[in-house]
Image (cartoon, rainbow, N blue to C red):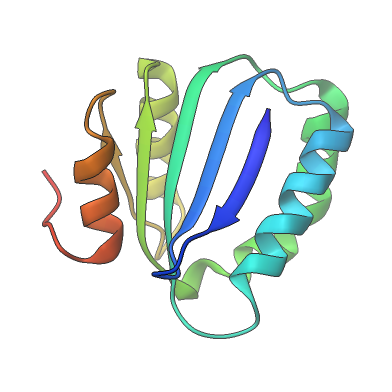
Length: 126
């Protein structure tokens, strides 16, 4: 599953579980780019539960979107990740370390409210 919505506060909610194939990746990234819009800050809560590595086709699709995604990094303000998988949280920390301007704060399962408060700017990171 790859579901993306925006709430009344403007927070983008991304929920991923299972394995993502090329069609789901394309639809999800198109939806994210649409919700991100062309200007203004991007705040998001990313829930990743029980995910498997994406298919090779999904990875190829994601590589095709990288120029557009990198173009958004300067607008990404508060990104919160909640995952029940340590490797997912670890990968997010690697991305934060190696992609200039990208900061992803990681939260444990059960800390969804804390993650949302962080994305809203109501709570400092842990």
